[in-house]
Length: 237
Ligand code: C5P
Image: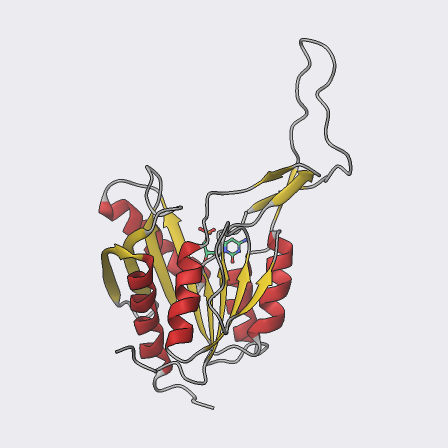
């Protein structure tokens, strides 16, 4: 039986990838399927949470019933939706793959190839997107997000040896300042788009939990176990 240990908790989850438009038909994007974030939303609902799912590209995925779903396209839209909702959340889980950069200029008409055989393409000028996760941690320090809100980040790292992926994860946990960081290895067909996942949950306390290879559903429940361990002892209103 599932523990009903998230009853009454408000859980805000981002899922899927963002798309940064170049023109009406093209964008910069990533391979995130949204599956892990949707699995988290489902698992949290089953454990009694009141879930809001802010979803980017998550092709063909349906939000579990009872979940409030908000669809976004760009990182800036995701930032707006998450930051305005975080003040009401007990837990924020940033499972979305957020584009780090966006094109500065978005053409209103489809960009054409320059005529002529030796035409060279114009470089795409990029601007940096806000780091939503770091923004949440800063907002918590500033008192705009409750001090006891649990903030969870994800790290998709490439690297073969287990040490490389873990080291990146530890460094990222410290840099982002979140309470938990879920690390998973990506590339070579791992994680993105697949149904199985593996990795570690790293806590700011120093605790590190290995996640056995398994379904994203299993992974979601392990991640929520780590979240509820942090929540117990915090407020229950
Ligand atoms: O730095 P990196 O993109 O690897 O960090 C991944 C984590 O940070 C994920 O939880 C992702 O949702 C979050 N992130 C964010 N805003 C960004 C980039 C990443 O919140 N602009």
